[in-house]
Length: 306
Image 1 (cartoon, rainbow, N blue to C red):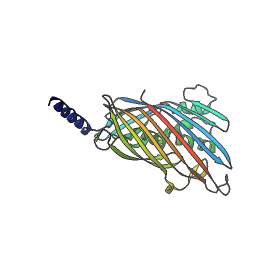
Image 2 (cartoon, rainbow, N blue to C red; image 1 turned 90 degrees about the vertical axis):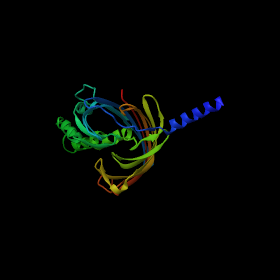
Image 3 (spheres, rainbow, N blue to C red; image 1 turned 120 degrees about the vertical axis):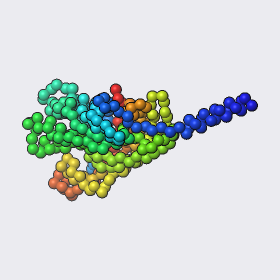
Image 4 (cartoon, rainbow, N blue to C red; image 1 turned 45 degrees about the vertical axis):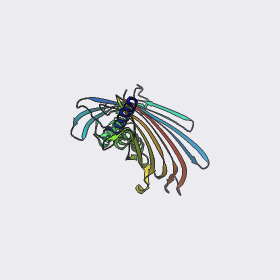
């Protein structure tokens, strides 16, 4: 009888644990600053006229978020880049730019340095969605205006590239990969929920991710996600590098995320995206008659808070 009683007590405790609900969300403190250290690597393979071109890009940086104000559902943040770096390998050439460099002849590193400690603003919901990012474009334009040696078409091209990497939509896309992962309602351990995000970089795409609360430790929520990525062709052709281009691609993503149980801030995130398909270039002076070629992209992002 005693063993049966112990078994019933254990079963009751197990069922109670399984039924317990949790509500992962942001619980940030006004006046506090939270850091996000991010490293993203992209491996791009294109095949044009039978020739395979490999492009590798790595972007890393530290971004600080100071809570200026908060209400029942939103956080109003002052955002600053604290450091920025970029590496590129393509067609046998390498380039390395870093905001920590002190070399006036390295224009790209000097521009990155100019972006550091230039505040802009963001509004983030308690579920981690980025409601808006403001003044990033103005900040980038102001920094580029400080380089009179870059003028005309070259300036517009550089500006476009920096907006794609560090502008409002790029910031929103980058942040939401790690932060927009929380459920709208309380969930039990192993319960699943779906979140749809938009990617706005050189391509426009939708990411539909099924997340699962896989574990709850005394200090953290552990969340895993599996997603499907599909480009949005309804947007038509976009001007990229001065040419009208359209991406027809799809792929998958995986995410493993650890969030602080008290603040909800992401302490660790590992995200991988694999996308493949074709790129169409519309008839234009640079490519008469247009062109179409296959492309694959693999993105890996690691984010920590320190």
